Image (cartoon, rainbow, N blue to C red):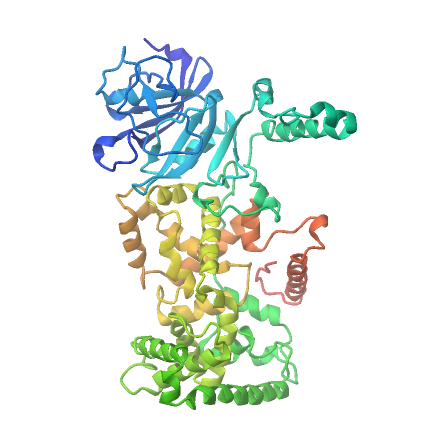
Length: 627
């Protein structure tokens, strides 16, 4: 049938969308490449898929039949390859009058968006992510795989006609609601205003007000969703309600966090000069007069090598910022005694004792192995029988006595070696390590919950910043960002040169300009590689290989400028998603939340912002102050 060109309008089109006729099998015969489109036919929007070989032909609808059948001929060979909890079909009836049985066009479909009930992300046995659409009749269409990404662009296009709202009970399921209030009547029957009605009369007699308004409250909640104006997608209930249990199977790579949010242009950023003066920031008794100003300078330019030994001890909490010279001498004396008491504990363990202490023996074995291969190209640790290696070993063994619950975990030697290199002192490097570990010790816990959380937070940030890149990574089974694990575990220690990592760490230790700035650094690196990744033939393995090959190939100043520019871009967004605000520590709770345990952290941030503002007013240098 010919299509009137005046009645046809193409709204969205994406190539490289594979329809899987049997998701249980991974051979090419069960995957059909094609186009996904949103079109308007006579003003009615519809979602359509057609194979590449049928390009230019109008897509016929695919007709499904229920499990119990209706007497029509069914294709017993159709196997959807999955058993979703909402599935009500096991066979499909095709339009045989127009389409031959073996023609891939038999899988083409056209679904009016008004008939879309839900869409869900699923992962089947062949290990790829699929998009499964279900009609209001309860019939799921064959699963679609976006080989080249594009799901988020599809969502944005669909958002012109319908609202997609995340299910509060399944983080992978999104329900479709109409924008048009005239269509609301079709969904009232699903509200079950008075539950099943089994005891409606008795409940109404006992409490007519509660029964009546309990039903109308459902109408109110329904209208909140159905009449929500087009714009940023709402957050899931779990994001707003801390009491709501988190969904363990939520797949953050599919969250509509960016839909409708315009971040605006990313500003240009310039780096500053490193901190090269110290004594002028001290009062006559040796107190640091303006620690916030020092942190600002460190954030913008780092610290000159000659001052690192002193400044790092403040940044890592070994010395309080308001301590005098005399107090610091006392602190050093006490901490020295404490360190050697702990060192004697493991030094005095005999070989016979250690044979009966498998935990200590295991720590010693791991430390000896890692020390022998940590930064051996650095002259401080190079060669055999190097005293630097002995100090590295002793400090790590002593840390096991300081924190025996955590002990030693691979990667901790990477954190210590720069500290030992800068301080050139066993005691000072140990206490600097304890300060550093206060920031990252959860990275090394066996549960790995902190690492999972950081990867999730990184995913949230990347979705808001670059949904196209996030979509591509997700299409290649890399949406979990697991290739960033090493970055976050040891704060990019193996990605940059030894000298660069000294600068990066002191910049992050300044705690400016926001929480989790190291995640913005990761976003900066990933976005710098988007041109290499998107549009290429990369898959999961080659993406991992490419990321690993970035080691020693990144320019630190470019990365830091990019991370700060990302921060400024996000904070200038007036509709920044709540989850992004929470990751960056920018979320200000409402008055009802002020008495919660989390309010203390927000108050601390407010006081810090005020102190920084005061510091900036005392100095005329044009260095931006961050909240």
